[in-house]
Amino acid sequence: MAQLVVLDASALIALVSSKDPHHNWALDMFRDTASFELQMSALTQAEVLVHPARAGKLEKFLTLVRQLGLEITPIEEVDASRLASIRSNTNLKMPDAVVLHQALKVNGSIATTDNKLARVAKAKGLGVFKP
Image 1: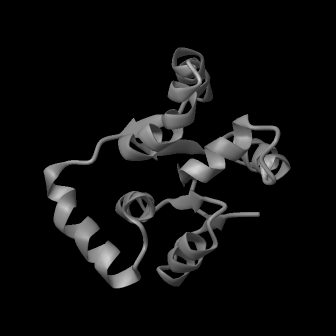
Image 2: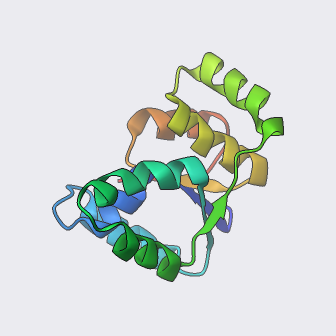
Image 3: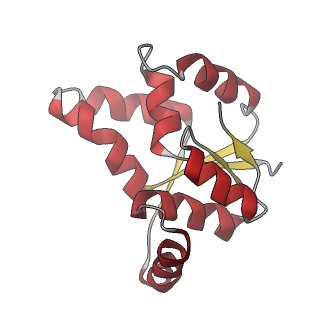
């Protein structure tokens, strides 16, 4: 697998929530990828921040994300047509299409608890970390 992992929101949510059914998997996955570069798109980050924002814990959560050393990658205008193609060809939801697009763009692996995203990523030849 590539030494770069693009995180889906589900992987980070599982890590920080001990109540998440995939929490232990996420702990193991983050330990196993400790030497890897970790990326998350700005859209994925926004998706992850919704619950902490609602709970009044946004700054605390942002501090945690910074401590993980995640690189937050932008979505740029040049990505739009490729994202539209991925979404139309795979029927993935846009947040999942963004994760897949970023992993394809950097030849990385993905980390997700989403079975459909994992299946599509594997079909495209990407490495996948999933429970």
